[in-house]
Image (tube, rainbow, N blue to C red; front, side, top):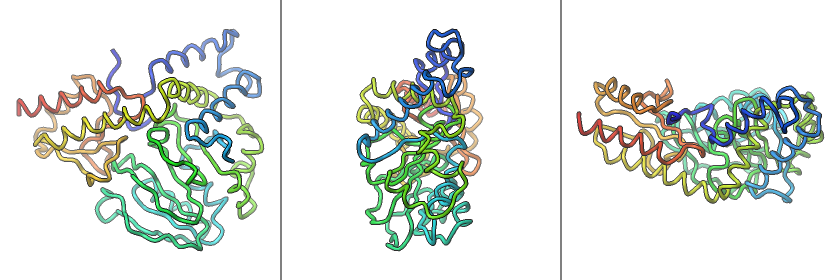
Length: 354
């Protein structure tokens, strides 16, 4: 039996996706060639990347709405640079809610002035700032929808007249939003979509016309858009597995379905964290992430016992990030409800014997 995988990334993937991907590595499309050795210009792979791009837009309800989906390399961290390089002309506004937005701010400062409209750094990023003003004269507003390390999630997004760029790396395709409110969305595949190596970028076509300077080809969104994500050799395996995962999600019923499952998982775990006197959540309740739950033991002397128990229960990846400590349960789309129940059972058992 496979372990219960709460790893924050690379993510858990559906078993059916792993089975199909493993076969494709040996023999893709029954053509006696591996997926990872065929030409990326060949018709079979072009069909793969086109389907992945189409499915991404379909799940976000952005098909036929003037958006383009791209699969690029470099991880979401490369987007910290690319977004600013392409669109930061004079001044941009950033919401600082954790490690990744902090890094995005650092990169963007290389290209222009930044306004940090709000930050939750004062409480080690355990909440999402609510009341802040986005100036009307900025080139764009940047935010991070879900903070993997600290376990916070934006439940709503500001109403603003300026373009909105959002890093959705760790909650993409997990909940229904009005995605047309965003001018550019980016997400590393390895959190909720596929293996490491690819980054999904969904960009409004009219936003492409706002590129404000001459940008090197590999960092220019227009380059990749005009070449249909094939300007250079794409991350073939990661794109293929992302396509399979998006197909799996569609077969389940799409975001509408998986959002309900994700809510069940989060409700189950947070209810136990709140009920069990041995544990304490680290995030303000209203900002708790449905993807990454962070919590600690009230009595650190129980750490060794608890660690031994969850490992014995075949639970993987529960350790918290070094900057936070404690525990982090990442409940991405492919994590089954019974895995969360297995963790809750261990927490109950620790309470019984403590």
